[in-house]
Structures are given as structure tokens and as C-alpha cells.
Length: 410
Image (tube, rainbow, N blue to C red; front, top):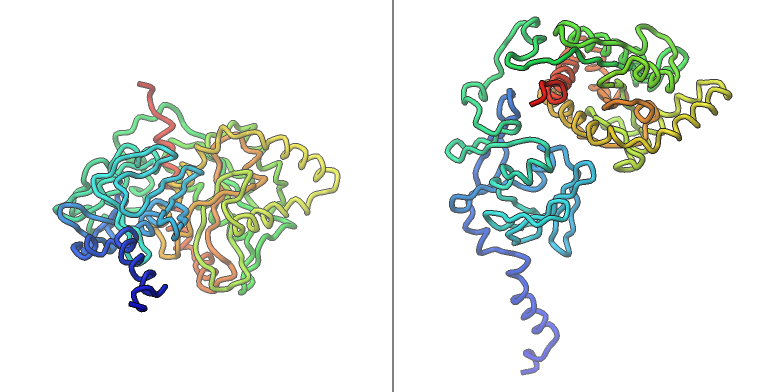
């Protein structure tokens, strides 16, 4: 009897009562592990792990965040996981039959499964209009093939999914058939740093300003060959250009899109991969804030008089938010397409207060091509073939976004 009245006994009883709420073992035990193939349109499929329960397939929240370049936040006590893109929050709660999309409750066909500190989301939700609005990308799931196609509202041919067709260089640079271009779009490519501003320095002595210029010239070559873009570079050689002048070039030319190319650096030599940024007054995380501070430090190479004038101009641009959403979508497309061309990590889409983006009156992104402080990244960035592949990814992302904004009005 004393054992029954002991605190340990009653603590165990409470666990038995509450455990089904937090550990749906009976549900999860019935789920069978499966391999799920996913493919971004036009890219070969990759395999990820998932689960199947009856006719429902599930993908982990971590995998969803990676596929859709979203930030993920865990609330372990309340058993809630949140995915964030451009400030729009998608939330899932353990065992819930509804998701929260920017505060709106959206029904799910199957409940969210939470097991081993992982949330498993029904894949059918990825096809829903609410999720497409949040992600900006349609998706289709073929249950028979266990194939998730991102970027299409219908299945892609299996043959096309298995291997990327080999095409000649000229064919790769042609705009896909079937799109009507209303006018030529103006693209400004900005090779970061230059002249007395070397930017980051690689462990092997590589200067960021040199890598940025070589990549910019390659991207310009790809875009010009299409015949549907007008391209301008902020610099064509090793010249110092102020941050405000770069924005001014884009604005005076009435650019439709602005792409600033950079190469990263970090204290940790193991940091690797490319990152895509768009302008925001608030950085997405401390890493993005530190990077913006480094890139903005180029203003120190300008005279004190010009520096003061430019800071005032840039502060005046803080109120400009009309291009933030467009820039976010543009960044997502570029990040997605670049990840299909190179093997270095895709570190996702982030936001921070970059001066060169803040002063530009057009959808604008800043693309960090890799880490010069990482030995392999530095070797890659010095490689012409690697830069060509990476720029082909950016080129494809630019084309995909351009098709969205340059079409006949219905």
C-alpha cells in the first residue's frame, strides 16, 4: 500500500495517461518506412526516407524545410514545429488534423505523426492550394511511383526524371519553347568588390574580387546568348565601384532584375556551400547579419564625404518594401536551380540588410558562391568548369523568374 501512495507510483500513472498524447506509438508502429523520390522539374530524382500509413505517405518536417529552403523551428514542449519562408509561418502540431498557415487553420487528410523527436507531415498537404501559396511552388505526388515532383502540378515523364538529357552548350542557353516574351528584360550583374577593395581572401591566396568578376562575365555570356535579355555589368574589370554607384547604375538603366555576386569567408574552414540573400531590414540570423556587415564594410573604401552622403541615401531607402516579396521569390528560384548544378551544399535562402540591395529599385538578390576559406570551395571557385555550372544554375533561375514577370496580360 505504501508503494501505491508513493510519488514515484503516481508519476508513472501520469506518464501512462499522458504518453499517448505525446508518443503516438500505436499509430506510428503501423507506419511502414518507404523510400520517396523527389525531383525539381527538369532535374533527376533524389531519394529520401519517408513513411506510409494506409494510403497516406509522410515526409519529415526537416526534409520539407530542406526541399523548400525554409527555416525550421522546434517547440519540443508543446510538440509544435514551424517552417518559415519570408516571414510566413507554417505550423504543425503533434497528432493534429489541421495545419496553421500564416494563422489560418487548414485541414489535413491525415494527422501529423510525431515520433522520436521528429514530425512527419502528410505529403498530400504539399499539393494543397494553401501550401502552394505558402511555398510559391506547385507539387504533384504520384502514389504508384512514390515520386514527388516539385515545380509541376502534374507528373513529369519517368524517363526525364531518371537522367538529365545531355545537350550542347548552345541548346542549354536557349529559352524554352512555348513562352511568349513581351519585351527584352534588363538584367544588371554586379561583381562584388573590385579595385582597392579585394573582398575576402582565400586560404590559397584567391581574391574574391577576381572570382566575382569571372563568374559575372560567364553569367552575362549565358544571358546574352538567349536574345531576350539586355545585360549590363556594374564593372568589367578590376575597378572600384562604390555601393551607391552600383545601385545607381541599375536604377538609371531601369533594370528589371539585379544580381550581386560574391564569395564568402568564415573563421571555420569547414564552412562550405552557396547562399542566396534578399534585402530585409532584419537579418534572418546572426550569420546573415555578420555577412551583411562584412559586405557593407566596402563603404569604408570610399571618401568620408561620399560615405556620409551615401549612408544618408541608404537610410532613406529603408522604407522601400515593394520589392521584398518579389526578391524573396527570385532568390528561391535561383537557389533551387543552382543546387541542381553543383555538388557543394546549398545553405538556403536568407535575408539581411545589404546596402547594395537596399538601394536598388528592382527585385534584387546577393549570391554568395562559396567559401574561399574552405579548401575545396576555393579550388571549385578557381575552376572555370565549376563556375560555368554554377552560373548555369543562376541563369536557369533567372529565366524561370523572368518568365513569371514577362508574359502577355490575360
